[in-house]
Length: 151
Image (cartoon, rainbow, N blue to C red; front, side):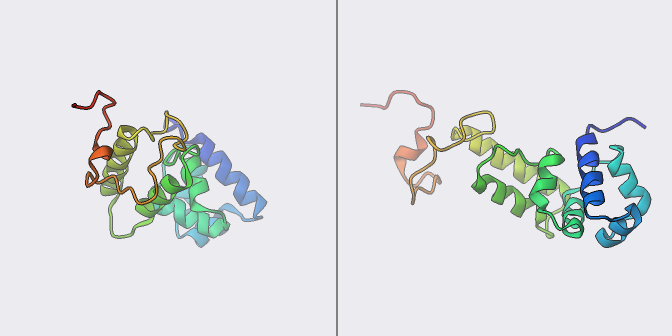
């Protein structure tokens, strides 16, 4: 079976498990997953869902966001606001995995449109002033194309 490019996550999980002095079986039991499944995650053969990562984080007593970054779900360069939104979406039990991914894609597309995407600046210069909702109610906020204004 080919690796799914989650080897860093697996190595990180293994290190956290060893630091916590837990056996594979103990962590699997604490997180509510099967022993073979956890073993496959640690070896980079399986990519766990956000819910499984949250369960593992709770069992390891580390933040779920740390595991999300390791799994490539969150970008560690995002500001705290973006991490909070991502975390809220990923941990919402009322959404399925497909819905979560769609919401995250929409959220990221809006951030990029507003100059706050992951490959842009850290967002400090482009951050909206307090009270700016960005919902189009304020005409000056809708002028995101950078073109000349009609005079």
